[in-house]
Amino acid sequence: MRRLDRDLDTRFHDPTRHYIPAPRPYHEIELWVEKDSIRNFLEDLAAKYRLSIQVLRGFASLSMYRKALLRAAKRGTQTILYVGDHDPSGLKIEEVSAREMGIDMERIALTTRQIRRYEPPSIPVNRRDSRAREYIKSHGKRCWEVEALRPRTLLRVVEEELRNHVPSEYLAEADTKERVERIARPVIRRLTRGIEREALRLMETGLEERDIVRQLASKYDLNLEEPEPLEVENNAD
Image 1: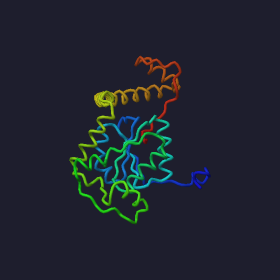
Image 2: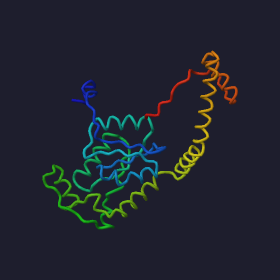
Image 3: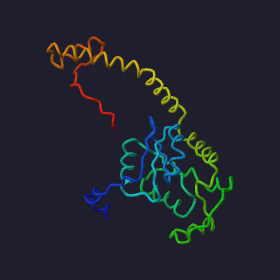
Image 4: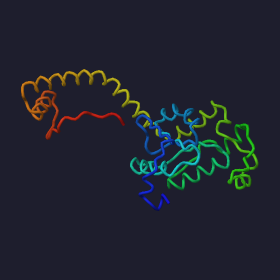
């Protein structure tokens, strides 16, 4: 019904599926995880590789997919890297997400190859799961959670995948920009305080706002062909 009725769809809001933006994110790729526990474990690693994280918490809501689709269209996201359990629901979640998003969805953990290589402990398939029969036909009566891998192993295999997907040039550029901002920040703060004092002094002389802006721009050699009214920057986002 929500797909057919736009007005009905706008009445729903899902605050439970968290989206964690990375600093200076590499927008072409997002990292999606099946559950919050994995997000907590991988959050620092994702930030290192400039990848934002979307938490699904099982089968995601239509609201979450709506936001993700708008985000992907705006930022040019081309690939989703997925970390989820190798069980009936985990595989189906990946399939549904790929269908909803319509872009490349790549499972980087837990994979069949990783299971064969690292032999993590398994658990019986939950036969009450409606997807159990199909899973058992393809993979047998045992399944695996992501946490079955040792923590160091999981970090290593995920980092290998992230390193292969995110260009090293982008990471170097992002690191450089952050260093430049960090170096410039104390100087900018002092300049800002000085300019504000000058603006206050000029305002007390009775000058109009536009004339104050022109004088300050001239003093600091700023080319403002058409100065705009001063605005307070909002960093809430």
